[in-house]
Length: 196
Image (cartoon, rainbow, N blue to C red; front, side, top):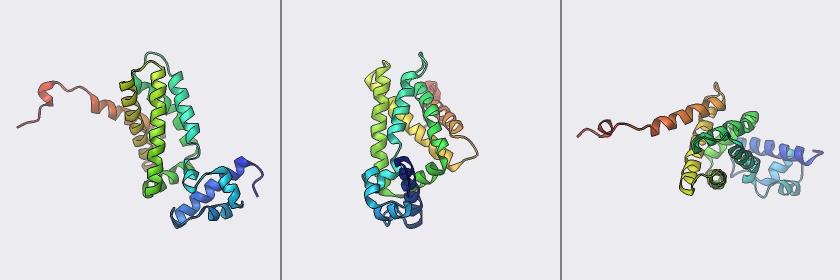
């Protein structure tokens, strides 16, 4: 039996990940996760309010890291560059935990109930990023747009990292933000018009 709360939590996460992959999310119960982890069901619910939350543990830490990094980013940067700095530093959390991050993202992508929870968490995180940008003096409108765009770009980079592990998450982040810049590059008006 796990000796500490941290160890029990880690074992519950690993057990959940294994069972979700073996049986599917919907076919796995909290009791089965607890049994696989070597704890009782009450211990499961002491750590997690429901089985979905097992895969979202650490979201509060990620939010705190991102908002801290936004606050501490160098002065003089545009909002998206501030977010890139924050994502690059906070992305290390995902890279350090790749054995859990990779199958977690795959499960979320394949499970409607988890995608729904992921969207709710993303909305909360986006709101926190927008508020952190406002705290740096970015206007409401630009802070919200930057937070939504930045998070979508981060998500794109994380998926690329899962699909192509030959490059680091940092390399995928840099590429995704380069792609974003290319998408928003100003095109001279004559070139921008579609041909008739």
